[in-house]
Length: 229
Image 1 (cartoon, rainbow, N blue to C red):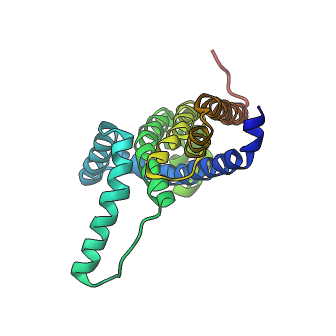
Image 2 (image 1 turned 30 degrees about the vertical axis):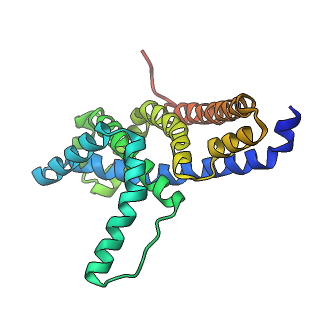
């Protein structure tokens, strides 16, 4: 315990970095998820195929491989294009940007299916009733589609978020000083790897526990007035 207290600032800094990375990647994932769901449900064949290719490719490649590809290959590709076209000078992709964007794109594919399934679960008759009453599309989305989509999507959203929060640990391989990286560094320097990995274990458990409780409360709020069988 004395070692944990001695390195507490390093563990706290790593925890803050992990939370920031998880939240930024969540925003990116939600944007990609909503766009992907819209594309899959649209009448455009091109949009459907593009969204299908996106989800198939992303879900078929290991997360770690994509992170390494974006961090190393993405920077080389962007600078090669900039040098060939003369549109920009040397661009350096930070570890945080590479990690957050890659995790966001990865989980955007999972959120795509979550949101698509939630929208399809909404009874079509309710939307048709809104149209027959003369409600504009924005009003239909705000009062009929959105509240029910959130309720139907929350179980899948909760699962995806908890997995995404833990997936942030992969960024330690590219040198981002998150919780795992700092815990490993402290454990290696003191020769007490198990102690610091156990501390990281507990911190992740606390973060996922808090997230689960918050999302359960949100689920109860959106399920208010719903009769369950």
